[in-house]
Length: 320
Image 1 (cartoon, rainbow, N blue to C red):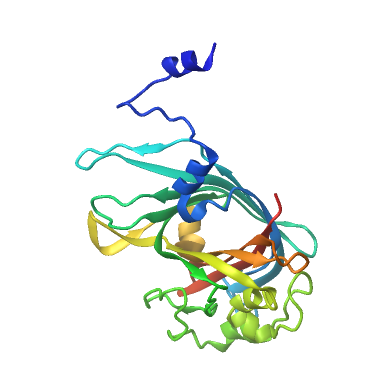
Image 2 (image 1 turned 90 degrees about the horizontal axis):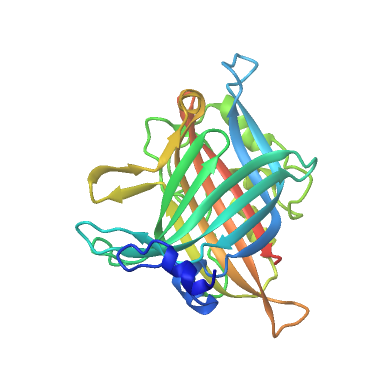
């Protein structure tokens, strides 16, 4: 069957045929996502307070796990339009990429995280005067999420990477913005001792990091990883699973759904993240550049009467 015959045989709803455009057009339609397709590899740091049973005087209710990590992120363009059919508004056409993230422990190669998902560029519509970016993901623990951008921009030069606080804080307190480091933290010394005294993992982290400072603020790793680089431009996308909806005025929509076991034992209640897609001058060939992806992600886990920030950071280079 020749291509024109195939096109005739496929459904053509409301005159929209979902065929891919040229790569130049596809890239433009992806917006700030256009540099993502390909394979990214790099290193990072993972901090998570995990439940440790019911606890006792000598056995706290949590275990602070710290990992140096190796990571791969593979992105593939979704060819063609993704029509969102309008009923009270005109139909809009979305474009995006799907991805697979794999994270292993840097020391022994043990599996830490596997995540398939999508990044979607949503054009402005009758409700939103600006474009938005949406990330959808599923996680093997039994969680799924939808996160929407709170801001995005392109800046000259390198990223501004602000601190992120990893210390637990009361469950009765509201969850602060990702870079708010002034909120109250739990002062129970039983809980804070690991954050102040545990050593950093020996593998894959930049040299010279102070353990207590890095555990308190894992973005110390990101700043150290780009020390000495010349970054000429950066695309910034910040996202959250807590976002307003035209149908729900208060509280904001919470875009995480967990299986009952997770809800009962360590409920994942909110995710916030910032991604920086950077153009870096090649030190060997200064007239050329390479692409680098950095991110910080905080997932709030709720158990034992506290909000526990699970913070992950990584710096990845586009390899193919």
